[in-house]
Picture 1 (cartoon, helix red, strand yellow):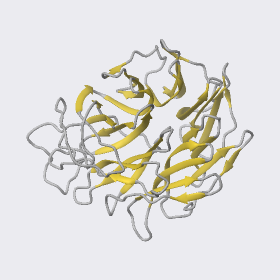
Picture 2: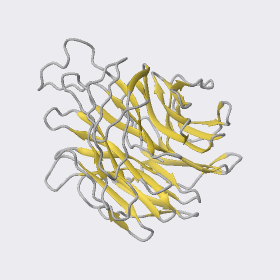
Picture 3: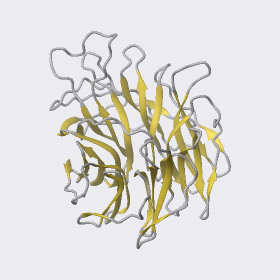
Picture 4: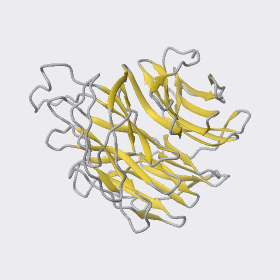
Length: 404
């Protein structure tokens, strides 16, 4: 399962289907234009294939859930309305949504129990929104009322048909304080659940047997790992919980005794971020070395763990010369002799085209060694550089990548 702390600006969604390469150099994109790159890979890694094509003008997809190589769901927002797309093995297609009684809506995360039992959460106007897929249609499901000026669910963990968590935050008044909200589905109804103290519940994940972990922002604006023991939320401090500028953004479960968390921190005396990854082995947190593609500016926002122990981490690296953001992927192949995440180099960002990329969601594709990666691209204002691509429009939108 994956989650990102901050929802990016609205961008256009782009569907991905094939490309070969391991040292990826992504050539400049434009709407309706595809590019293919080839290269050699680290022997421990698989080959990649990637192709770009415009698929949806006006949407940002924020989360993806993959059930098989021919069945995946992505959710997000299109304009002022929630958006859902479905992968059927041949392409991504926009799906019809049920009528939502609100002037605006958005879906922040999707999670699946199975192909006939899928949940998506977000907001409808100023109220939390939950949709359910029964194998045929998406329908709104009543939530337990939240007494607040505004509220929304930002993260979701579907464990079983009678065990689903939806978490987020509520604003008590227009200028009031923010507090965490949590609800639980018991197979019959959504009910208010115990919630840790803090301002936002940023990410949540769960094992198949119901071990639930999360990342919250505390009242003093620090990130904290929490664990649900069946009765209460317990704090599980990471090794580097006190490092400067620590920002924990994503968490994933590899097994009942293995949990991964990632984000970024600021080196001593620096004002830039570098990636951080830690693994819980059932007893303590261990630092896992990660690649740092840029000396100044790189952070991880999403994790995905396969059933064989393969770990994928996605995020963003910043080019210090152009200050444009590049999407990056890192990969742990499950070999116990390997202790570091190997870098899949940043996608190429051409300042003359204003390309800037960031990862918003990812999911391992069952039955394969592939992962869906979702994100956005667009133009970044940069007054210290010459005008960007003055000869034509700048490509702007989102992407869905498939690696294999």
